[in-house]
Length: 305
Image (tube, rainbow, N blue to C red; front, side, top):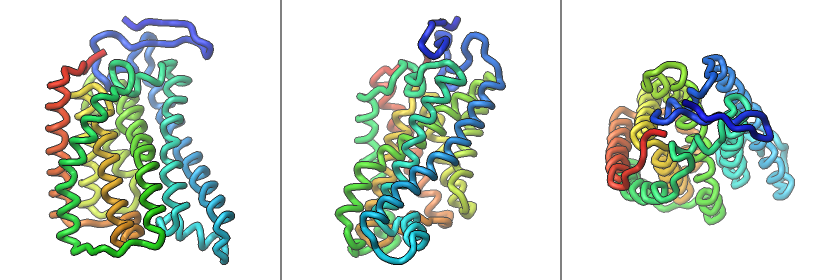
């Protein structure tokens, strides 16, 4: 049975005891239309606010640097990660997904945002830190393979130190933003429509892959598989911490390597990979998923409310 508490913004609903993460929004008085309304609002705010924040920060960079030429030319260069302002604006724009998901779950579902973190309900920091370390080790395999297969050599972009600082500070926020939306709110919203958790797992992963824009089939499968593995981890561990960890390390490695090898814009605009690269990616993420699940079992983490 759900618990109902009065709050300053109306009524706070808590999920029933003994339900898994994807079923958290099946509170007292649950209606399927709330999930669909929430998804519509969340995705609308994604398209509206993420772009506005990104453009605002890039405009600030243009005003500070005064590079000459038109803002349009500077903007196009920036969104391709050709300027530090572009990396900063893009990452902080996507980080805005965290307060967006908090707002939607609180207003539409009348559920506290802390339930997006885990079934505890909160983000379990100890598990997050451990899985960050695990991801740093496991995903280093992909990093080494990338250096070898691409025959990468040290050729940093101009001002590489500034890029690296921005990547290290803001990539975790950007990765967390995506996880809070796709493996957090969307998994709960779609997962609460039907009793089977697989509906939420598959649909949220499909939306995640599609939101990455133009891509060839191997890259789409790569991203879809990552979404599936991360969503299954959420269900098996009871929270989004492992997904955040893998996403953070993957992005820091990829864009950090791009800054040090002069391929940052190519990494940002990646639209195609071959099947071999996709297989290595999925295999590495699968290895991480198994390790993260074993860590969760060793830590005896709860997987239900």
